[in-house]
Image 1 (cartoon, one colour):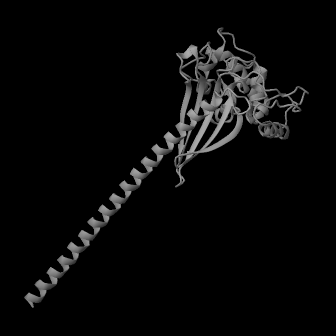
Image 2: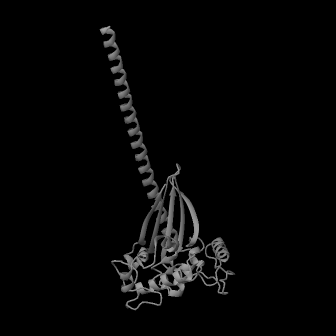
Image 3: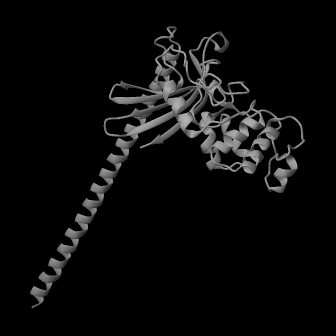
Length: 297
């Protein structure tokens, strides 16, 4: 009986050892698989990122094309091509079609905010606060905000009283929140120097803000404008007030969205604002004014 009991205990111990070894082996297998997936994801993300960066360089090359009949048009229309195993999607926007927050008046800014769905008073407050942020004086506009208003809001900073230095700086303006910023981000710039955006290059977010514009008219102008072949003037397109849509005011500063997608579905997007080069920038083909890595999937 003692011998049988000893054999029974030994059998149970063997079973426990086998179970423990199975758990350890299973854990090692899971860890190895997880590390392999992480390494693969990192490799795919890196490959997609550099493929997207190649899209930025391709866009610069096409924008510098001296032939207007084959030069890519920076009015937001999509361009696609393959780079090695990646598929690249590009959209370029001439910043002269955007609203310059260092130059635009309160009327233009108010229209931009109202086009996103904000009520009139809130749009006026934000527009005046932006003007007060960038102007050199300490006198608040009718609905604006200077140092005292920021203190009343328990903020530890006040308006710059100087031009905006980055587009994202507008988030610090009193009354601005992230949702509003995201709704206007594609419509604003620091680099056009224009009081009014050029409708020939304006993105849909800007077209909606033009006087008298409806959503249907904005979509129609965008679709017809992007259907024109390169080098063709947008003849026949009119704004609600009867002003012809012309591709005038094209500058040297462009916003570029480049998305690279790998065969397995992994993708990365880069958003860049660049200025084409020349003698003023040491002969380089372009300089980067703004750069942001987008989402990886």
